[in-house]
Amino acid sequence: AQSVTQLGSHVSVSEGALVLLRCNYSSSVPPYLFWYVQYPNQGLQLLLKYTSAATLVKGINDFEAEFKKSETSFHLTKPSAHMSDAAEYFCAVIEDGGATNKLIFGTGTLLAVQP
Amino acid sequence: EAGVTQSPTHLIKTRGQQATLRCSPISGHTSVYWYQQALGLGLQFLLWYDEGEERNRGNFPPRFSGRQFPNYSSELNVNALELEDSALYLCASSLLGGAYEQYFGPGTRLTVT
Image 1 (cartoon, each protein chain N blue to C red):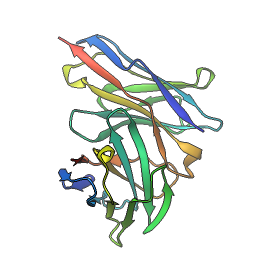
Image 2: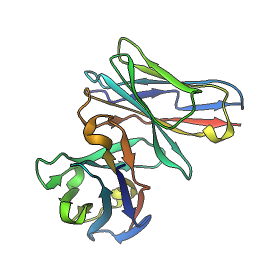
Image 3: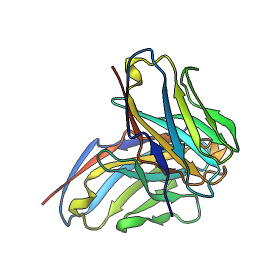
C-alpha cells in the first residue's frame, strides 16, 4: 500500500528564511503526489501536484517541490517565508495510480513563522 | 468560479442521533469525496462518488453512508452517532477519475455530545 511520511510535525522558521518541509513516499508504481495547506479552521488548499510531467513542480504562493525518485522524496520549499505562510501542510499520495482516487495523507507539518 | 461549498458549518448532535452533511462541488466536477479529520487520527478517506455511484469506500462502518444527486451534489449521513465521530468532515470534488487534483471545501465541524 502507498503511504507518505512527513518528517517533523513542527517546523519553525524566521520571516524571510527558506522553508523546507519534508515528505517521503512509499509506492510500487509511479505516484501522484500532492501538497496541501490548511489554515486554522479552514479546509485544505491545493499548493501543487506531481504527475510525472516534470520533476520540479511549481505551485501557488512561490512554493515548489522536487520529485526525487532515487530518494523517494517530494519535499516542499519556499525561498522566503512570510508570516502568512503559518499553517499546517500535508503531503498526500493517490493510491493505485488513480484507480481508487483515494488520497493518502501524511500526518502534517505545522509551520510557524517567527517575526 | 465558486469553490466547493459545505453545509452546515457546525453541527452539534447527541450520541445515537443521525447527522446529515451536505456538499456542492465545483461546477463541472462530477466526482465528490468525503474525508474525516479527527483529532489524533489525521485525514482519512471516507467515500468517493461519481455519476451518482459509490466508487470507493474507506475503512469506516456501514453507519457512514452517502449519496450523490443528479446535480452532482452529495450528502453524507452518519447514523447512530458515537462520541468518536466528532471531527471535521471535508468534502472535495474533482473532474472524473484519473487522479485529477481534488479541491476541498471548508468542512463541517461535527460535535457529538
